[in-house]
View 1 (cartoon, rainbow, N blue to C red):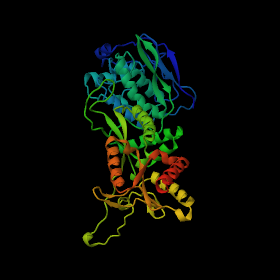
View 2: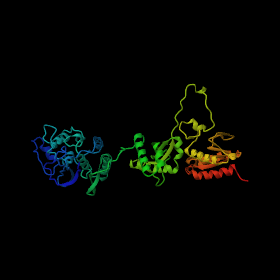
View 3: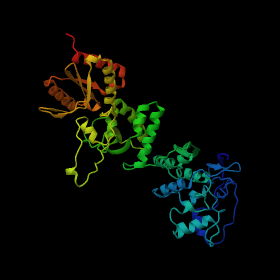
Length: 480
């Protein structure tokens, strides 16, 4: 297949205006004329397609070679026609249908579909100007004009003419139409781009484009679950390309939704926030929530926000990570009389079906806690046999004024005890920090101190091991 070429063609003036044709209608057949520069029947793929403006040059397309199959699919063509049906003022714009089509086709050479009339020109005048018994979209599927199943060049020349300054003098309106058309055409490898200017307004022409796959049709609505999944897939691809392996893997198991951010509208200069802004919500397995640190969430949002902006969802201005709701347990009518298997280890986590990490038949609330457990095991093996330590993950204890508590780790050794808490990103808020301090005070009243470890420190086991060796030695095995 050889590519179509853009050429300049000169054309003589049309011999008959619409008004003259209407006046002379029915007075006899219009003689067939073959004029140099006229647009011959587009249904023949191997004939030249040229325009015939009355007194000026125009940009049109010609074929070369023996094989020039259509690349624009029937799906895209019908989408284009649906778009054009909604155009205010009709597809012919400032002109009328005969004047519009006469610049692309030789209407006196094309046949009539009505045996009473000799040519397409007289056919159109009768049914659109006199009788007005054709619908406004009649041309889209008329086989004489080849817009539905003709070569790409026929449809592209029609669309380029549709946004020409002579048809749509408002440059902003023409640009909007071009953007709408390009969203459909680029999927099949074409786009309209400015080629020249007329009276300061762009003249558009078709150019080959790299097809974009998969296409996410616009608009992207809040409840378009399948489209949002493709958005998340594009984010996953960008993270992979940028070497963000951990963020990429976390995104793979997430579900993306959009919702209004639910805040109060207090406008501030330059904050870009309105009462209509949205937030992107990543719903993930409850056990994975601690993995979404501030840095991890920012890396994901950087790519996700860029994808949403390209899809015209600039109103989505933040990212929230939430745990998936626990599935409701299956119960029977005699649930009151059924026995249970109580345990004081990881009571809350064991009641959930979220798949928390486990080791040595013990359950942990996060991967970070499992990483701490593995470091504690190393320290346990290093201790002398006569001065060992015991590790109690998520052991429950009843406190006097604070109910039942389950610290992340209770470490016993040398007749003493110390607690270890692994703080995820949610512990950094002011309210949660105050709660943690209150909890530590209850344990101090029992003579037990708490070691707090930031979630991000668990990804450096060597440094974590040195810190715990020092803290446990100081609190459990003090030297006099």
